[in-house]
Image (cartoon, rainbow, N blue to C red; front, side, top):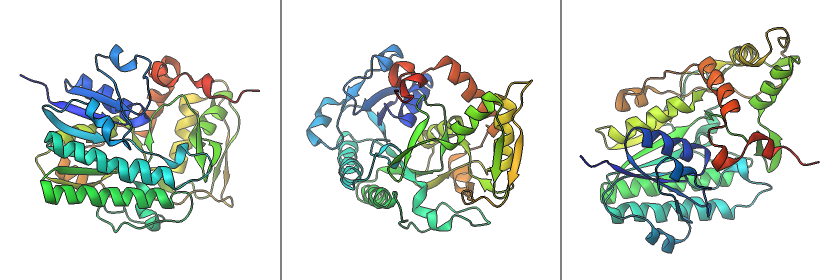
Length: 337
């Protein structure tokens, strides 16, 4: 029996690499595609051929296989988290033009379905809600460094919907809360400025047994999903007998206190546990939880990994560095003195 062939764009990124490895283990014929000239032999080591393609360049797609493509997963494109400073152009070129080119490739090869990640910030105006945010909530554009990113992602979603209606390509648009996974780079960009990822900062404190503060309401819920539950949703979207739509990716959330106590439990030395101090007057991020009922009913999704489960796996990957050949090691990202 022939394996179903899957093309993964953005395969050298956080999610794309994890998707490629996971689907390869499920016995799909995976074609990893990335913008990097070289993957350092990472995918070949896992039995997959790597293709270097610039999604903004239509001619580059001629390099790719065109036969027997079952599904296209489009995880390529600029992210605010990796943009130093601000420029609208990379969002327009990589997300809008890039998505159009990937959709045309999908149509030309006759693929059955298309999977695309949508940003959480299209529903940012609903953050703070006491009830879970539904998958089909109206999409809007926020202020701040995400505005042009959201405009581009919303335009991409509209194009994907058009290709479904015009050409019958099933579409699975998955709205991502933050996907929790290990990456050796502990830094991100917020409003164009490089900062340490907040959870990583807490983990570093816990490892040293240093005091940790909980700001604001400790019972505030924040959406939390492990990369392993995210991968389950990708798996389900590939086999679902529906035409698709927009699906929230979430788990029901964990409280701020649960998150901090989990970090202390997993990372602090047994003889030097971090002391937790409550600071209710200090401002922290706004509560939000996604309604995942549509994802459960239509895709058969069932959250399996708790926050504690994720932290245990994170700690293990800090030691084993499974993607070191592709991304380097954590020390490679530390500031050079």
